[in-house]
Image (cartoon, rainbow, N blue to C red; front, top):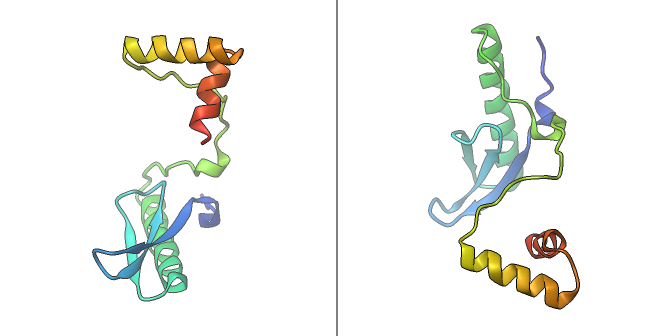
Length: 109
């Protein structure tokens, strides 16, 4: 089985704690790579993921599905305190929109 490591979700950000850039992969949250430049951090985390994926395949372990390959329904359930639910319902009514639309608008801010 061969998996394209480029389908995983990579991110590079500055780490004030380490005074270096840190390369991350959302599908492998326990792994990271520190480097002096963002380009080196990205190369480092991609190489690390490639090595881990190769090892997991060799050991017949289940690989995480790349987020870019998942299908999302656009629906999820959020639990909020009753008073928040009430206030959101009031805000939606006063705005002349559905509660769902209000929540969607607020989540995208």
